[in-house]
Length: 155
Length: 253
Image 1 (cartoon, rainbow over the protein chains, first blue to last red):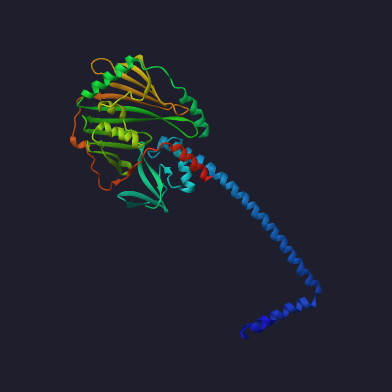
Image 2: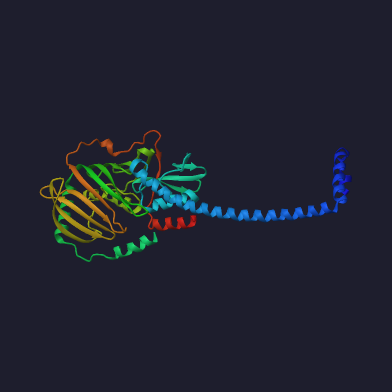
């Protein structure tokens, strides 16, 4: 009733009849009031169900992680194919594949990849060229018998 | 990785204690003395290189190296391999530059006083495989048998129809064999390197064709960056690159 007095007159015109109807229903039929309480209980049950769903989602996330591991292996296989058919493949020993997989997920500074992700821009610092690929900076370098890219802090 | 490393240990532990056969040493020295007398030469090399994939299989990639050498102050190399971008090396006595046209990238160092010390610097400080580095080292009056633990004269063999002496050497982590032309021109005609530090022992082979009176344009030893070329760094040698990679993988999991 205190909220009712706080309402401005224009809204009170609509709010008053509505509030009156609700009060009438509850007051006039005690059985209906009990049903409302039961409905509240049902809602609680629904909440429990939602919690179960959340748990299921967690399980799905775990599966996604497993898939990521699988993708790492797939990437290596793709590299192998590239070795036969593409000029950009660098069949580096195991280190290269492992490091490349690390960069895909974490872009750890100091890790080395054999090719860049798409959409990079060249930036210059200290007389050397760097690649900015979505905020991760790669420094191209001649290594072994190849150009590789090492992840660095922003130059 | 851990499994692989464990398997590698016994291979390196089996170090042959055999002495170095004086006949093998004599053959290497005779070849080295002859190479030092050459004022210029060019080599065409057909190469094969094994690469071991993380899952175990060993693949082989072909390639060529075309090298032009002028005594002490000129080296030009075009190195091609099926599995990577072509590299071009330039040495003019002052600067050593490598150019990778496919990436429009070049990297260079100021060379020390001699070709020999330049090759040594590249080998010790930088993580760079210098094409035909062994042959150049000998031509530049370097020492070929410094790290050799055992050596033997195996016998005779033919390379591209040329009669050769066949020799074998062992040093830490590496076995290498060499076929040296018999007769007046004791030139290396084939080199086969076996890496012992990996379970499947990948090999690298070079079959060499020589020209002892090549045409030389002095400009070929100096790199001039084309328009749009970018300068990049040269990776320095790391003592344990594999350990870093393994740690990185664990962190990502």
